[in-house]
Length: 296
Length: 318
Image (cartoon, rainbow over all chains, first blue to last red; front, side, top):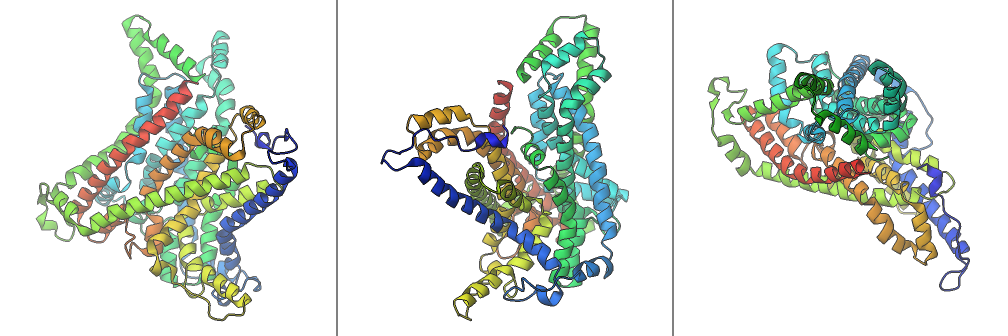
């Protein structure tokens, strides 16, 4: 399971079917393949690097052809983004609130549900599980209009709480799936042993289940946070000035400020920063989480 | 392991016990599930029911006096609308294109990263970066910093390369106008390839290496091992990647909205419905379109769910 297991195994024979020394040929190929891997990696990260580099250039140097790669660095773009025109702080704080609060709500709803679907499964647990997944397959646009009308009639339009409610529903199915698969990893023997020892529900939860699933809870929280932070369509339709989130601010920023490339790159980088930091910090958890916990 | 737990628990529930106690135990089992279930039904199914009702109504916010029952008129308009049919076709092309290309690329890169080499961790980290940029931000960067015909990185690089060979007449294509759908597809492939790679890499690292070693000793070459051992092993991971990728890419709004604003034949279904609802304010027609999309999704999802269902069974039968 760990990465090192897949390292190239020792070569059993020293010559291949045509009599060439195998080890040497393989090593030669390895160098080219490693080089290829590096080139592919650099190509994929290039747009991100370009975004960061451009964000530290002056506007004059940001929009040149050919690109001014070695132009002097400046914080101009960031200064303009934070202090010129509309302040990005309220939208950033709105995004933070919506993502954090909805993530907490998701966990509060998903963990008991996943418990009921794995540790003490209800009858037809797989049907319930598929119901959750099927809601994820329901295109979000199918529920957008009624939610909008509901918000309009109740005065909840442009209210961060409506967004929180929706983000909770958006992430709940994923969270239930992930948590179920993490809870399935709790060894039955440990549960039985706890029962034999006469441990109550609270004690079993705290000393048997919690230590096993804590990393899973962290992964689930991370994924829910990222999806809420990234969401655009609902935030665009259901919010205006008060509850505007960072992605919505980003799109309106481009239209209202005109196109200042360095500023745009600074804005894009600032908005992406929380996800970049969290994602890099928890790469392995991310994989497991994104595949609904089914890949281990 | 899971299956043992389930069987023993289910078995325990089914052993005859005094009725009241059994009912209480069944409710204790169901209770933790109910908040999540009720919440999901209220927040997702009720709005969809409302959409269904509105889809049979004449309702345009610009003409508030003409609200009434419309029968199947909205559906007839959806099916005869050229824009809707184009949107269906665009959605299929966009989803299939992004999923297939990013799966193939992801598989290649996962195979490259499955070997040990200097800086493997660094390359892996570089590969993940595209997935961690907020989708709108990524779309904006692609549109303005990369595709821009005057100062975008792509044309800048062309100028630079042509300059190396002493030419001051490099090609400067307008990427988005020349190939709008491909412009959206490339940006999405860039974001989704890392996701496919991560899932496939996890799959590769779960391969039984002793069997592969045995095959190698028996004289199987790399291609034979890949065809007859690695690929079958990866099958369920490929299916999972395709399924999850499709769920998200069918619903894509950010890239279409940002890169082309749905112009030049890139308006997919979510964007088209957003337009009918948010700009034309034709609630009835938007709802009918949404209902059609849901029916289409249900048909596709039935096949997709079968795939996942085999994954769950496999897990349970372990």
